[in-house]
Length: 386
Image 1: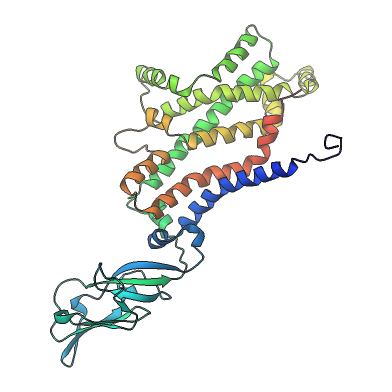
Image 2: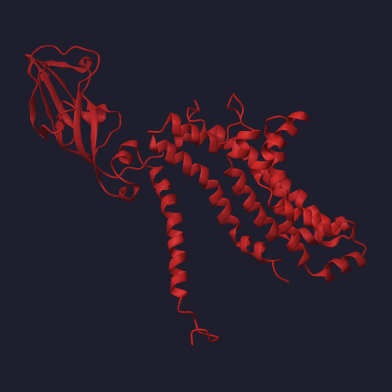
C-alpha cells in the first residue's frame, strides 16, 4: 500500500529527520561563531557560547590602585576604589564571592572579609568590588597589588572585537586589508569566467561550426582534471610570460579552473531554451550577438546566478590558489584564509579575535548564498533533462 499513488512513503519521517539533522550540524558551529564574536575574552575562556545568555563565574586577576593614589587619614595611609574600575573594564553588576592575595590561595577570603597582610597592611574587599587598602606606613612602588577574585558576572556582549578586527587604524590583526584583498580577488574571478563561458556556451549550443562536438567533449574532459595537477605548470607559464605572482595571475588561474564547469552548466541550460524564439529572431534580422545579449542572457539568468554562487564561494574560501599565485613576502596581497591561518599562530589564545575573524570570513558568502539561492536549484536542474 505504501507504493500506491497518492500515498506517502513510510520513510518520509526519516528523510525529514535527516534534513533537520544536517541543518542542525551546519547551523550549530555557525551560531557558535556568531555568538562568540560578540563575547569578551574572559567570558569565552569561562563558559561555552551556549551559556552566553546566563551569568558566568570567572576567576579574575585585578589590581588595587597604585601607591600614587594613596591618601593619609589620621595615622593611616589608605587606597580606596573599586577593583573592577581599576581593571579598566567596568562590571557594575559583577558580584565577588571569594578572593585572595595569592595565586595559590584565591579563595582564602569571602566578600566583606578583611585580610591581614602583615607589614603590607590590611585589605578589605566587598562583593561589588569596592576595596579599602590601609597601612600604618606609606605604600611604595609603581603599581597596585594583585587581587585574585572569583566573581559572578552578567552576560556581556561587545562590538570591540569587530572594531579590533575591521576598524583598528593600526591594522594589527591584518583582517581589514585581507578582507579588501579577498574582494579584489573574488569579484573579478567570478565575473570574468561568467562572461567568457556565456559566449562559449552560446556558440556550443546554437551555432553550427566544424569541431563543435570535439570542443564539447574537451570541456567535459576538463571537468575531471585535478586542480593540483595544473598549479605548478600554470605558475611556470605565468612566470615565462611575465605575469608572475599577483592579482592578474590569480584572476586568470581562477578563470581557467572555473571555465569548464561554467561552460558545461550554461551550455546545458541554453540548449533547453525554446528554439522558436531564436529562429524567429534570426528571421527578423537579428545578429548572433543581438540574440545572445537581448534574448539568451536574460533567459539564462538562473544558470548564470547558479554558477556565480559556486564560483564566488570557491574563490572566497580558496587558500591553495592564493598561496601559489598571489601571496608575496610583503603580505600586501594576503587573503582572509591565509590571514586566519597566521592568526592561529600569532593569536592562538585570543579566541574572541579568531571567532570574529572566522565569522567575518563566512558572513559574505552567506549573504551571497541567501540572496541568490532561489536561482540555484532552478539553474542546476534546468537543462538537466529534456
